[in-house]
Amino acid sequence: MPSPSERISESSMTDLWNLWFTELHRRRVGLTIKIKQLLYTAKSPYQRIDVLDSYEFGRMLVLYGSIMVTEKDEFVYHEMLAHVPLFAHPNPKRVLIIGGGDGGTLREVMRHKSVRATMVEIDEMVVQTSQKYLPSIGTAFKNPRAQVLFEDGERYLATCKEKFDVILVDASDPVGPAEVLFQKPFHKNVARCLNPGGIFVTQSESPFFHQKTVQGIQRNLREIFPMVRLYTANIPTYPSGFWSFSLCSDKVDPVAHFKESRVKKSGLTFKYYNAALHRGCFALPSFMLEDGEDIGL
Amino acid sequence: MPSPSERISESSMTDLWNLWFTELHRRRVGLTIKIKQLLYTAKSPYQRIDVLDSYEFGRMLVLYGSIMVTEKDEFVYHEMLAHVPLFAHPNPKRVLIIGGGDGGTLREVMRHKSVRATMVEIDEMVVQTSQKYLPSIGTAFKNPRAQVLFEDGERYLATCKEKFDVILVDASDPVGPAEVLFQKPFHKNVARCLNPGGIFVTQSESPFFHQKTVQGIQRNLREIFPMVRLYTANIPTYPSGFWSFSLCSDKVDPVAHFKESRVKKSGLTFKYYNAALHRGCFALPSFMLEDGEDIGL
Image (cartoon, rainbow over all chains, first blue to last red):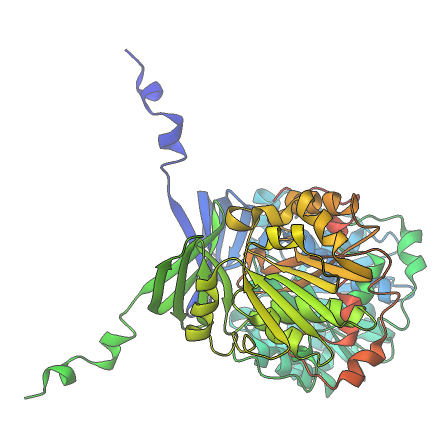
């Protein structure tokens, strides 16, 4: 007679287990992902935090009900947020990251050996969660060139006396705790804390599903920065699979001033970013241009 | 006393109606879309055909259980399949479309006034369905410069005596009726039916979800065509939201030989395509390059 554990077949443990996580990207469309296991759920002072283990994307960090990173496709977002500005800038030394609690952006920034970084994350529990559950992403928190502060990023910048070469905003959507990071008072402080020739990049939502938000962020940024350029990347687990980033500067044109040789000299290799893509990702679909048509999505 | 139709409130007709169409893009991830109504279902000699009306994407043509086009995002696929080769070619006159039964590719091709096109679709019912249910897409079937044949595209090309400047394969996935259109015997006939300097483009699946298929198609094409280049586009309702196209030629380099002035001179405007994007869409993420890393998705 089989023991009880032998009677529980492999298929009853996996194939018959039918748990799906669905993130609605708009009210009536969403991505649905089959889940092996819920690994962690917590309520921090700022948001609900979940870690889910999925079949297709590996482990997923979910904040506020939205997928922030998955092990399988996080490389796109983090490489494109970090390396586009760090290679557009001729000689970055000081980098500030606002948000980015999962650590993926810091990990990519730290690959530039000439750089010292400060990361200001409001929610310490996100960092702790990433260190424990996403060890391939939260790898750089203890790097001696990195300083990690648990503070309100908006308040940090409002009183900050230091200047930076590159400032990155790695925030969740402009609802909830990150809302202020998409608004003009914050962007004015960003501009004040950039060195001459400094570069600011913020994630700026889905061109398809948030067309008006993307346009609104552009308009706000153009009132503060002389140079504002959008670039894009393909992220399967983000709404519509297509994402935008806004790059701002007083004078650096991220394409015209880009020196491909710096990428080669760095010796770094990437899963997504490369020198040709650096130029290509600034070529926008017509509907994303300033006079672009409303696509009605 | 209210009449029976007054007693049925608006919300019971819409808000409480909760019908979702889920297309699994891999076994354990899919896109889920709320549906207003099923407009049409049929079984043709080749496949199951459905038309669904959705809240977010308008009407959707579903073949073989997969979304082929939606009213809201079809412009991306059709513009990128048609205009990249038609502007890469210096002077296209004869165009052949294999598949493309919804008519969107033919519609975009016909915007080039110097072009006569032949479209060879195996399944007449797809064309009839599009004409009836997707009138903004199936607009060009009666254009006097267009000839529409209902035949097996593979057999048509095997015996075809004519030569074309541009050949487009607008097929469903390489399973089911379209399978032969991704194989070498077919590609040899394509090469035979191209004029010198002619261009062939075929849709070639999702770089993220079908990485090995994309690579396999490239390898096959490189055995036949001297010049094979991948380009990409962002299509929210296709698997991973990111799609690849393979462009092949005996000698035309779609970037180096591209003349931006032809786009301007055409007087055409686009929702997605433009001259800068023509160059940009050939800049591939590192994992899509020939020595690209397996992303494990």
